[in-house]
Amino acid sequence: MGTTPRDKKPPTMGVIIPVAEGEQPWTPEELAEVREQLHDDVVAFEQKFLAAQAGLAELLTLGADTAGRDPADVGSTNFERDQEVSLAANARSVFEQSELALRLFDEGTYGICEACGRPIGKSRLQAFPRATMCVACKQRLERRA
Ligand SMILES: [Zn+2]
Image 1 (cartoon, rainbow, N blue to C red):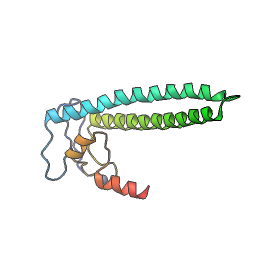
Image 2: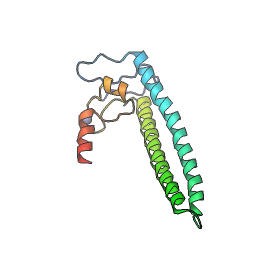
Image 3: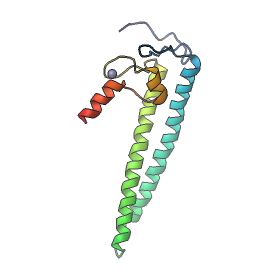
Image 4: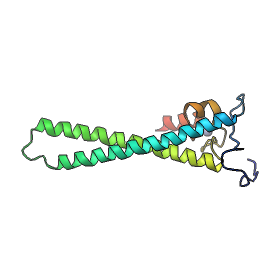
């Protein structure tokens, strides 16, 4: 890997993000688009996460008082709570991934696979801006999981 100093560059302009073999280099417009998408996801999923968390807190308060209630009612509250738990967890993980990707972008290390160090590829990042791994590494990880 090269050791070109990166600290003299302005934040977004002049950011070099690697592309996969055979891909065209990023245009400034494409870079701006991906960064905007990441930023939007950070904002949107943080809100989703906070909303799900608030909903969950409410359900837990309700769920605490099950005395004398119809068991079917209690069951549906539990179901709702489980839904809310996974909703909150999903939103949180998307939020965290997007935030990480945005930070890498601003640090100038975005688009490099965190597992193998090769370019993630432009088309993959455009489809999935918060990716921090190339397709091959991601698939290997998922097979192992
Ligand atoms: Zn990789």
